[in-house]
Length: 210
Length: 372
Figure (cartoon, rainbow over the protein chains, first blue to last red):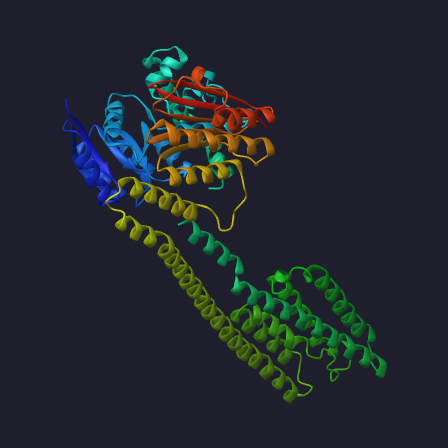
C-alpha cells in the first residue's frame, strides 16, 4: 500500500529534490512553503506522513505540528532540517513529530524513515539522539518527575548508540535485544520528551544560550 | 537572524532618548536647588535688614526651603528620575505658593524674598510635561494676583514671566526631543546599513567564493561536496554564534578537527556532541587521539561517511565509527604507529583508555575515554 506524503519546506529546490527522490510507493499529495497554508492543506488532504522543515516562515515547524495535531491526531510528522539549533528541533518533537532527520540524509534512508514513522515507529537521527541526551542530562536531579523525566539506563544506552551512528539492527546486536525492543525504547524516549516538564526543557534551551 | 538580533539588542541599550531625558531631569534638579538657595539667601538678607514685624514667617520659609533642599538632594542625587516626579512638583508648588504669600504674612508685603523660586518651579514642571508646566504657571499666577496688589505692575510682570517661561521652555524642549529622536533614527538606520554591508561582505568573501569554486570543480562531486559542507558549517557558525565568542571548548575543538579532516580527506563526518566543557590537558590528549582516529578512518576505511560521538562529563568519551573495510585488530603488528603511539599511548599518559573494535568487512569503531 502506498504512503501519502505531504511536503512542507520553504525551499522550492529541496521540495523538488525530495519529490523526484522518493520511490513510487511514497506519493506526494501536496506541498506548502509556509506555516499557514501548510496547516490548511494538511488538514484538508490528510496525508499519512508530513515531511516538515523545522524552520518555516510564518511560525516555524512546531506551530504546524501543534495546530494540525489539535485537529487531527492521525497525521504523522517527520521533522527535518539543516539547522543546528537544538531547541527548535526539540520543540517540533515535543509538538508531536515522530522523528527527526537531517537534510543531508540519503534518499533511500529518507524513504525508510518515512515508512518507519508511517508504521508508528519513532525515527531518531544521531543528531536528535544527541540533543535529547543533552536535554535530559542537563536537567538537574531535584527537578525531575521520576515518572517522566528520567531516561532509563537502557534508553540512554540506546540513544548513545544511535548518536554513535548505529542502526537499530546494530543496536539490537550490541545490546543482545530484539529490534522491536530497540524500537520500543526509542518510542518511550519520544513519549517522555513529549510529556516532560516544559519548564525544565525551557531552562535547558536557556542554559545553552538560546 | 542571530547576528542581527544581537545588534538590535545592543542598539537598544544605547537608549539615546533616555540619555536626553536624564539630562533634562538633572537640569530640573539643579534648577530646583538653585531656586531654593536663591530664596534662602534673599530671606536671610531681608531678616538682616531688620524691620520685619513677624520674622518667624521668614525663618519658616528659610527652614522649609532648607528641608526641601536636603530631602531632594538626598533622594535625587543618585537617581534623577524623582526630580520631575509628580510629588516633587507638588511640593515645589505648595512651597512656591506659600513663599508668594509669605511677605504678606511677615508684614513686609514689598519684600519679594522668594526670588526666582516660583519661576523655577514653573520651569521644572515644564520639563515634566507641557501640561504640567502650564498648570503650575497658571496656579502660581492666580496666587500672585490673589495675594493683593501692593504693586500691580510687579504682579502682572511675574504672571507674564511665568506663562512665557512655560511657553518658551516647552517649545525648546520639544524641539530638542524631536531632533534627538530624528538623530536616533538616523543612527539606527546607519547601524542597519552597516550591518547589511557587513553581511554582504561576509557573503561575498565566503558564500560567493565557494559558489565560484563549486562551479569550477563541477566535474568532481567529492570536491563539490566537501566545499559545500565546509561552507555550510562556516555559515552556520557565523549565523548562530554570538560575535567574537571564541572560547576553546572541547566541543569547539572537536568541531574544528572534524572540519579539517573533512576538508583534507573528502569524507563526511556526522558529528554529535553531548555536553561541553573546557579543554583540559587530558581532554586535549583525547582530541589528539580522536584526530588520529578520524584520519585513520578517512584514509584507510574506504567509507564515505564517519560517525563521531563526543560525550563530555566527568568522564569524556569519544567514539569514531566507520562502516568501511575494517581489519583484524589481532593481526596488527605492534609497530603500527597510528594506533599504538598516537592513540593508545597518548591516552595512557593521561590515564585514559582506548579500545578498538574492528572486523574485516564490517568497519571499525574506536572508543576513547579520559577522566575529567
